[in-house]
Length: 277
Image 1: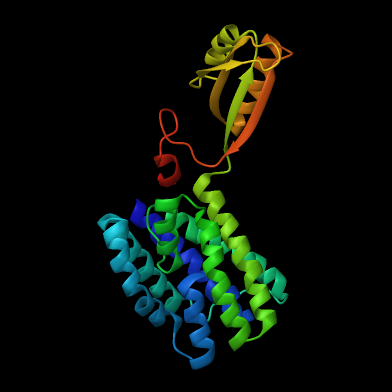
Image 2 (image 1 turned 180 degrees about the horizontal axis):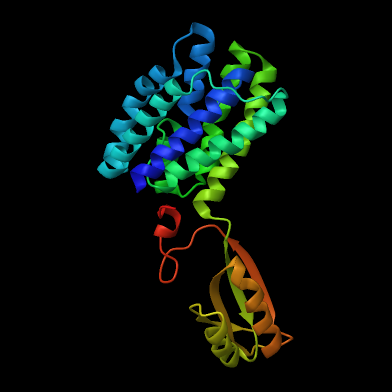
């Protein structure tokens, strides 16, 4: 199933490149963007250049990201190259460049996100981004944006500034879509609750929210009284139920809600990020 989804994601991405980016002289991100620049300048087919440029990255990915990832990435890059060839000449009637930019970003980001979510990649900066994310936990989309800045600079130098600026918008939209697919639209929240009724509240939260709770020891700075703090992580959709329980048990409770990008452990499997659709 992962292979099937990777092939579907590659097709979606190729459609965005051939039907929206190339007709409007725009760039996609990563090494595909470099390949498109070379096609604009020297008429070298994009589908050939992307394979040549990705060979060194597959070698590095094999060592640090694992054999399975590299095999799935090879499926992604091979199918993308094939679809870039098969969809060449396909068009969509979009005359406004900004609309083509945004639509292309949405479609290409969807394709890339599907591929990465199924533990593959389309090569290029996908592999570099995942390597950095593996060791430093930076956002995959944010890392790709940094690398794409270099590509945009080259586009401004060899093509024109307008093309570089439109491409930047498309890459930004694409990377946001990738992050949304990888982390899911149902983000997590870390909640810290300070209440004199911590025990009763924990029982109610167990009953109604059904999430693990940790008691933290605290002390009031003014009263010097010992406090029990409730620490828990919930999904965004569970937040309204949590608020309802807290306000019902102790209307005067202090509650801090913090955005949480990644959670691993009981109840929040690491496979939440990588499970196939």
